[in-house]
Amino acid sequence: MGSLSSEAQQHCLGLLWLLLICLCFYPSLAEIRFTEIRNDDRAIIPFDQFGFTHTGRLELNVSKISLSNSNLDLNKVGFFLCTLDSWLHVIQQLEDGEIRCALESDLIKSVYTFNSLNKDDNFNKLYRESDADQYNLVFANCYQQQLKVSMDVLSAMYNLDGKSSTRDYLPTGKTILPRVYFLFSVIYFCLAALWIHILYKKRLTVFHIHFFMLAVVILKALNLLCEAEDKSYIKRTGSAHGWDVLFYIFSFLKGISLFTLIVLIGTGWSFVKPYLQDKEKKVLMIVIPLQVVANIAQVVIDESGPYGHDWVTWRQIFLLVDVVCCCAVLFPIVWSIKNLREAARTDGKAAVNLMKLTLFRHYYIVVICYIYFTRVIVYALETITSYRYSWTSVVAAELATLAFYVFTGYKFKPEAHNPYFVIDDEEEEAAAEALKLEDEFEL
Ligand SMILES: *[C@@H]1O[C@H](CO)[C@@H](O)[C@H](O)[C@H]1NC(C)=O
Image 1 (cartoon, rainbow, N blue to C red):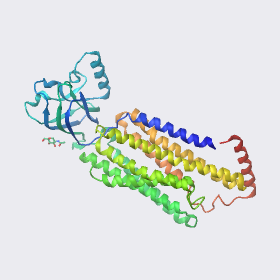
Image 2 (cartoon, rainbow, N blue to C red; image 1 turned 180 degrees about the vertical axis):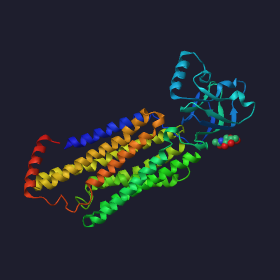
Image 3 (spheres, rainbow, N blue to C red; image 1 turned 45 degrees about the vertical axis):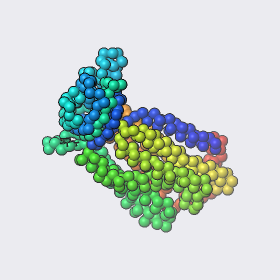
Image 4 (cartoon, helix red, strand yellow; image 1 turned 135 degrees about the vertical axis):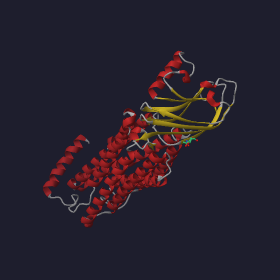
């Protein structure tokens, strides 16, 4: 049995490594952003990233500019747009000594250089971008050692949509996300209705956990609904302060309830036994507070944007906590499998136990697949798909989650004829045989 525990540990280590790799990857965020720069002498300050269509706009309003040294040629200080590809070429050019300043390269699109300031301490610039691509807004200061810059930067990037030229603040690959989230929330509401119907029909065999499952599905549906509204608010206004508080509340409840449900099902609570063992309670006592931390981290990550100072730290915290939670929920399932195997050997009810065993083993595999898919494959998809199709990773994650919910509901639904208890002798013998075989192969 040690083999299954160590397998679970290996999964956790693998997951941790993959997520650490994912840390190096920045998502694209789109909102009107305000950034304060104070006495900064960085050569390059990245601000934001956005997928433009051919009607892209960048509004850049910079105020309270103060420079520590006024005797320099300020055409080597300013803002520019640049795709990731051309940025790699610019770095090459700099290394080869072809150019001495990123702003001199012909691969970048200069937005504003500070020689146009004419002693003002602010400027407003509307930049039109007609080449569809994903751009980074970057500030370059080619006098790194000699010049410190302070300024307040307000940047807004959007695309103009259709004939009426309405602004769309979501990058081109994400502009259909509100609809995607809404569609999934409708699916979950239908699932919740279906579940209520099943609970009503099979009301004599319903356990507490089935009501808990209903709550989890409803929370998931509400969370998706808020996410749809939140994204559509960003799309229309460029700011995230519509339903974001509701969204965070439901994410939080959904996160906690889903992990709790996985643990409860994993322990066999209310199916197999009406109580939790001490070590199983401990898992819950670890997972629930960690989910609180994970949600706080998520809020900070979303609010501060990828180039904020604490962003990387909070993202590390979030990923670490997430991995710990994912690992913690595997152990109750492993323990259940272990207990069932022992029981099968000793109490003679081989068939009953074998059936439960198979169920729990499937559940274990599905939980692992779900965790891998939503944590790792989705990050991979996000990185390799073109910026134009960045919604596909969201759809993939939601489909995987949906499959997981449906599987869990289907396998653990209330049964009128509970297979755990109605077994005839022939089946019993067959199962005992199977169990013997299994012992020889050890999983
Ligand atoms: C930038 O300034 C212009 C002109 O004052 C204004 O119309 C625009 O709304 C400002 N942009 C943002 C994002 O606040």
